[in-house]
Length: 130
Length: 287
View 1 (tube, rainbow over the protein chains, first blue to last red):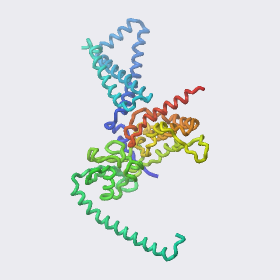
View 2: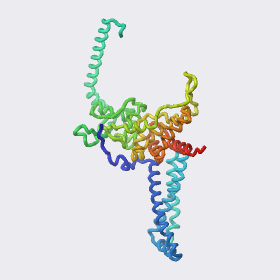
View 3: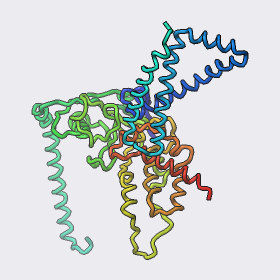
View 4: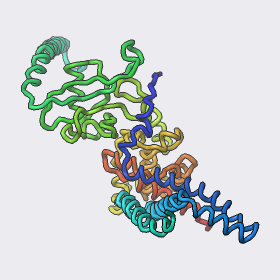
């Protein structure tokens, strides 16, 4: 009947500037979820060095902790985990139908809390790194 | 008419013709005045609003490649986006195509993508927008011509949830009213406001990627009837069976895009979430 025209980026993420709180929350939640799954693989790999013997495990951990990059990645991991947990609680309320009118504020609160936790963790993670 | 005598019928006919002629002449005069009025309006207006309108027509050689046309509209107090479009069509380009009917946010014809958001043209004031106002057809729908999109898929999804009242337990007496309690009416009140404009469907990221997903409007329609106590338990179960399928309520990822754009302020996400809980409850019934 009718021909149509694919308007490309306007259809999807090309209009990211117009995204509202709920959409950003969804994107961040997906992103942090995938990061955490990726982390689990490295986590298991590092922990499994303990199956060789205690000394290997200790030297692996010490070797990793001596890298500045790993220290920064740890801060990032905490930020990602904190947001995923806090937004997960927000989603729990959304699923229960509680306070849906405040879902956007809940998202902003999750962001602020994540930022606070991350900043507060910097001294712990980066001590002795420089 | 059959009771009238021949003579008077002829008279009526003549009268009608002359009336018709008068009207035609009046319309012709109006059309002749239009260009002149456009000029006066333009000079008389305090401000000139600019609108950028998406143009596309696969049947016209020069419009096969989509483009934006800019129109200068004399701004008047209370002017809506639809008013601006009508002005552009009537004064500058009669081929400019868009749907509109009631102009009061009831018919649901003029959902458009205005300044990056799904809105009803008739319900959106020009003063509330940043100028120039960019007007495009709804995203995630096939463009037929200019601002007109193919609504067939949306209507199919609406039909899929059986959007009409059905019940097995009718009242006894033939003329007995089938009354709804006040509380029940309040419960479904917001969901009855849907005008089938498709703004929610267009804004939904999931519906864009999953063509089988019922979409917010259809699920809201299912909610309106599933929550109506007059339909009875059997019918409610039937409705839950429809919406709990793979491409039903569970596709919703609570992005709240539909709720944000709904011109009738229907809490769509809330209704979808409630139906999810109803679906779980009906499946957890072991007795």
